[in-house]
Amino acid sequence: MNNLLFTTSLVSHKQLLCTFSSSSVDRLSYSPSSPPFLHFPTLPSRKPRISRRSILTAQSKGSNSADAPDRLISAITYFYPLFDGIQYGKYVITQFSPFQTVLQPLFPAIKVFKSFPFSGFLVFLTLYFVVVRNRNFSRYVRFNTMQAIVLDVLLIFPDLLERTFNPRDGVGLELMMSLDNTVFLFLLVCLIYGSSSCLLGQIPRLPLVADAADRQVL
Image 1 (tube, helix red, strand yellow):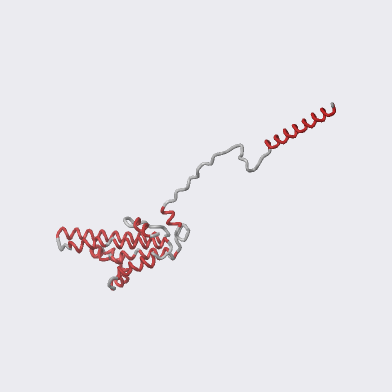
Image 2 (cartoon, rainbow, N blue to C red):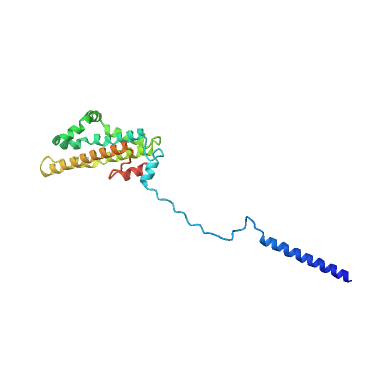
């Protein structure tokens, strides 16, 4: 009887010891799927701000500047508004000889441009559908071409004023001469600024037309 009780007590102690050991190991064991003891909250990342100018530059052949053909094509497009609006410089060119000297090399090209009927409209259609809407050209070329087109479209307003009033003398004529001189000088400055910036690989943004060109070039 005593041996039986001793054997039963020994078995009970072994079972209790095994149970304790198993539960302790389960508690101390580490599972890779269990969450870590320390949790560090992640801060929301702030995206760097990219300006419209940087986007436009980066989309030009994927670099910070356009290649040589893109620069040359973009620079040439700014001659279109000046050729189409050369009549607004009739007073400035005749009164100031330096303008004649500067524009003298362009007179043969201007003469050819003006010799064809509807040449301005035909060039407009060609530049818009062949260049601006053609994704084979880089965005750099299409943006500068669109700026030249919008600048030429703005020439409608002074043309309408001249056709509506058409003063012959007096204050009206002086005002019309001032308007023509202002339009011509603006076209000349846009040509110099736009073409020189393109040749240097920069992005010219002309007043009054840059935002409209941005919206048209996708």
